[in-house]
Length: 379
Ligand SMILES: *Cc1c(COP(=O)(O)O)cnc(C)c1O
Figure 1 (tube, rainbow, N blue to C red):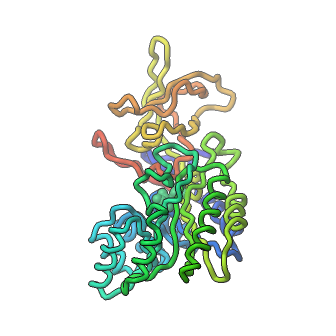
Figure 2 (tube, rainbow, N blue to C red; figure 1 turned 45 degrees about the vertical axis):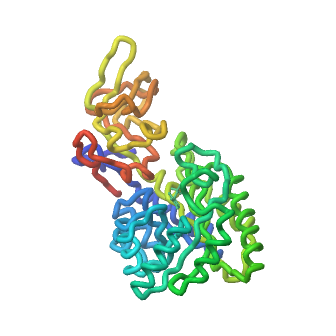
Figure 3 (cartoon, rainbow, N blue to C red; figure 1 turned 120 degrees about the vertical axis):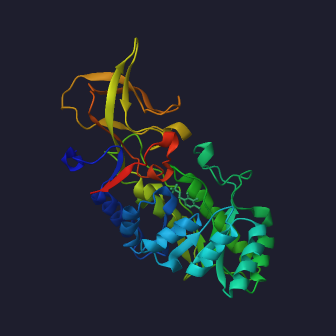
């Protein structure tokens, strides 16, 4: 990597590889052209305005989970008609914001929310398109904190309550039932859960047809994972297999669309957290590389035990390899990026990259320890 592009940039900061992001989007476009698949970017994965503008420029929709995300998506050029709003606890203020922007869909997560949205939309003199988020009870075989489709989960409407939910939406003057929404988890790297999801959708479609309900779309959510261990070998996820799995297993009618809300798979690999080595501390048995980035900049290791590949960008090729624990400066024992990492001999001032950090990296940054938020560079 040519690190001269980082000269003069204050560390730590997120670097986004524009060329890789564009290639990733090209790949998605090539896989979905001429299909009934419509892409919505999951804004919560990365809400950097520069990144968002590039994605909006492709004509994607946006999947938002807060009122502020809706405002930002509009500012960054997403068409309000293609903005979808999901979340288990939308406040009245946020719902009104969505209604006033004229967003394309509210993804409803409970019976209670149907009644709340119905009333607010009626009061505003608007008709809101809704999708019912169904909890399909599928184990996505991913981390317990990022699996969302199991029965005892807070997300979505239980399958057994769905008939009543459909009836309630259809009976309302201010609501229009557009489709069904699903999201079974994140960082899913096998096809099987997506295949099972499609089978569930087909069953629901058949069942509701008996009541004369025709859905205009099925939203399969996001969740496609990336290769955190080998970002250089696999910079672009296997979109071909993913979209083929969905399109070949879903039984769609003429005119019916599939909506997809990828986050991580779009932005994950294009981002790295760039940090500088503050000092290398020699302990009695271990050496610590202490960097100027911490869990306030990249929370995933502390939150999920996640590992980001670590590169020393300053080391000369052929340097002697050594073993280090790579840690941040924050006063928490969980502020660790890697234990027993094999890196080229590392010294004060070296630039370190934490790879595959484009998703749920800057988006989860905080000011813990009163630190500055990480900067951002798109090149
Ligand atoms: C988080 C989320 C997504 C995106 O998930 P990824 O794993 O980043 O693709 C999509 N839809 C909903 C409803 C979400 O909450």
